[in-house]
Image (cartoon, rainbow, N blue to C red; front, side):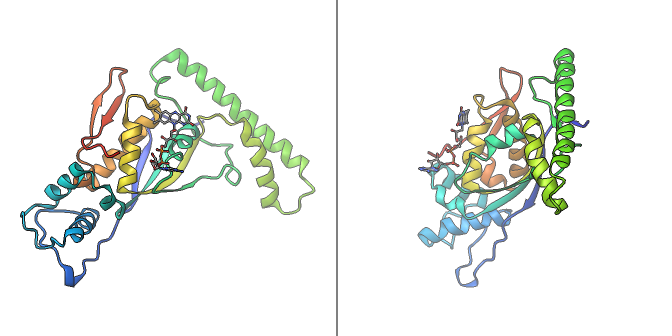
Length: 250
Ligand SMILES: Cc1cc2nc3c(=O)[nH]c(=O)nc-3n(C[C@H](O)[C@H](O)[C@H](O)COP(=O)(O)OP(=O)(O)OC[C@H]3O[C@@H](n4cnc5c(N)ncnc54)[C@H](O)[C@@H]3O)c2cc1C
């Protein structure tokens, strides 16, 4: 049985900016397509493509963040593949609706007999808790395998094998724990990512989703520092990492 202790976050989609020749911007400083897209949208509002203040993209977007002109950040979309999170963590994640899209591994179709399980951060490092947790999860996985076998026998009359397996797995998954690993593709525009990160990096957020949010933030900061650079992480009093936003947007 595979036990996972950290999430894995991979950038799988980024914006592509196609600059219109008739409204070219006087760019300054290095920037990525997503950052240029946001700057272009902001400058269009005031037709300031000639860049009168001579700002770099980072300076320009920093000012937009400070002003709370959030709609400018809705154009650029980043897509992350998130793996190594539990079903309970993904359930919290998908509560973020505005500007988000999700595709999550189906427990009806996918055989979970060899699923991995995500050990909660609070359990990690405590030998007795880890051992008890591992036993409980192993028992749940064994119950799942037994339930699939029983249900496959019960539904033997279903001639379509794919459909029969789905019928068995959709019922058997009920005994899988919240800790079962899921893989999920998460797409969101920058404004939506910022809102989710602000909520889930906070010390009030559950530790696993907080850890996931830190991992997402690192990827997004490295991809588009001018759009996410105002977030900072720190060691919270509970020993885990937390984060806060520089420019809060209501
Ligand atoms: C620390 C913490 C604890 C939590 N505990 C619980 C809990 O115990 N139980 C629980 O059920 N959930 C809980 N949640 C989840 C929470 O209630 C939200 O579902 C989640 O944070 C998503 O926030 P949101 O709805 O603002 O996000 P989104 O759905 O992404 O919405 C973003 C913003 O868009 C606007 N918006 C979106 N949809 C609508 C709409 N239909 N009508 C009007 N405006 C809209 C709102 O301004 C909203 O803030 C918790 C969240 C956190 C961070």
